[in-house]
Image 1 (cartoon, rainbow, N blue to C red):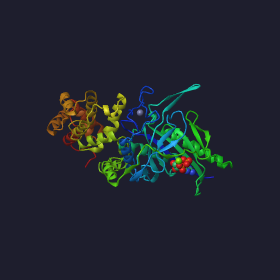
Image 2: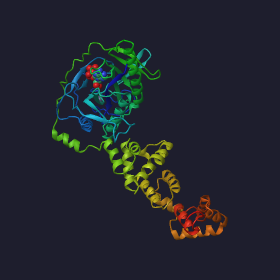
Image 3: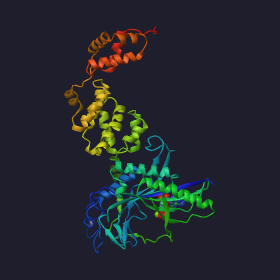
Length: 485
Ligand code: ADP
Ligand code: ZN
Ligand code: MG
């Protein structure tokens, strides 16, 4: 039987704010357990939450980046359940009036960062704001809880069941992460738990309209785990149906080491969270005017930036995808490209030399000793024939070690390539006079003899002659080869 998978994602990302969602405690990763807490995020009776405006603004930014509807009234609600990582026994979330609805993320086609994919829009159901819970650590028969994370602003993004393959789910997450990073909404670092993903997946015979029973896989902590878990789970469900069985609607976990999903709990009668309005918080109203103000300040979307780099600067799709994978990298690249006549050459330098040097030194772009403008200048020197490509690599190494500009290094090392035809002509004449054998071989039609003579010109000029001009001058002086008319 030929089955088709149907996938919907629920993604949580921590927002980049200075303080927590409803109190003044710091929003920072790590810290000694229970040091970033106060009566509000510990849920003491009688305290009052205060909405973090920056978290609301960033949620709207995220929504507008994805084309969501953001205007109107939005409310906070209490989601009631008991779990020891949640001090209040309810989580302040948004139930029926989220900040953002609708919208979507376009995958595939031109301007897409991943492997070639058919163009597809993954529609978003909603985006809403809630507070994070604390973190439990299980210590044998007891557990410890750290409330530093409790109350951090959390953006939840829910998609429609619009993805069909593990690759598409992976591509969606990659694109979403880039959008969030570009807009400075979240760092989406999965290793630090700043982005978490629950995956919903069902299968159905290809061609069937109705959706199959879905399984929810909880707490996947890397994109790779999402991809692997989906591949496994799609296969498992298809096998189950092939054997004449049925898929149970349940929550499953993912065992990364074994590469399998396993049952966690059967979905009981829809969990009753007894949602009701948070009585301590006023509804939020987003007017068309404030939405316009935020929209006017949105950054260029990564997809548009990739398309522009290809169309306007002549980069390949691959170059553009690498350079826009990170906004800071793309900004650096564009500053460097503006300082040079050859944007494609700057891209090559960035992707090979620069990224290589950074990873060898184990540092990030933020600590890069080479200014973007200096990299552009270096490429300009090569384009103008002032130094050779080979010399430029040495100069780059020196720039990376010392942080000095290329002009100063070239001058100090006396590297400037000789592009003066008169001077090169003299070296060529001297090389011809000193090497009659090579000259005779060249005239007899042996190209290799010319390489030897070029080598002599380079030696005489102590490596500074522009090799292309050396070939020109030698050919002019050597005259026609045998067999040439
Ligand atoms: P629940 O009530 O179980 O939370 P929702 O309808 O709210 O289910 O959907 C949660 C997520 O599951 C959404 O991302 C949605 O797109 C996805 N989803 C819903 N039904 C299916 C299905 N049959 N197969 C795969 N994904 C689904
Ligand atoms: Zn607090
Ligand atoms: Mg739901």
